[in-house]
Structure formats: C-alpha cells, structure tokens
Length: 88
Image (cartoon, rainbow, N blue to C red; front, side, top):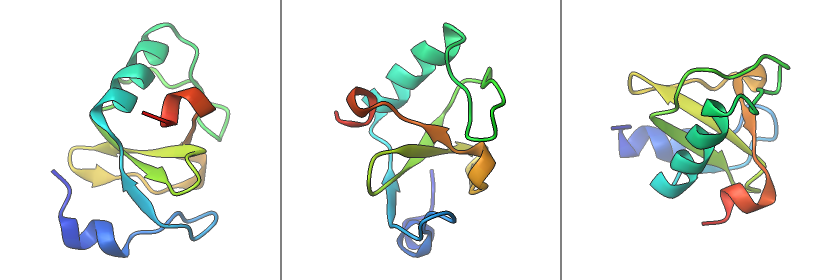
C-alpha cells in the first residue's frame, strides 16, 4: 500500500495535477483490457503486465501504475484512460 504522506505530495509529472489512488473497479476494468491486449502506454508500448494499483491524474485521463508499492511516475509509462474507464 502506498504511504498516504507520499500520495499527498505526488503530482503528475506531465501536467503537475494532483493524483489520487485508483478505485479497485477502475484497476479491474484496466486489467480486463490489458488481458485483451488493447492497452498501450503513452510511450506507445503495449501493456502486458497486470496492474496491482495505480494513481489517476485529477482530470481522469491517465493512470500511473504502482508496481511493488512503487509509483511509476514516468510520462511514457502512464496509461491513457478512456472516459468510461476512469469514472467509477
């Protein structure tokens, strides 16, 4: 689990918007799409590894994956989210 104090200071490296922990339902939807092979990150690379947790940017347009309790806050590693995916 991500440290709440860390979550308070992290922002999107691209837009500097606040981020929040992704709802488990959003993570589940994203993992279904990953299993279907229909997810690519902002760098254009296909995402094949299941997401355990993620951080969603305030505008709900992208998710930064958390792997082994470490947020991957690289712009190219962000996963763009469809409007229906982030709103749960």
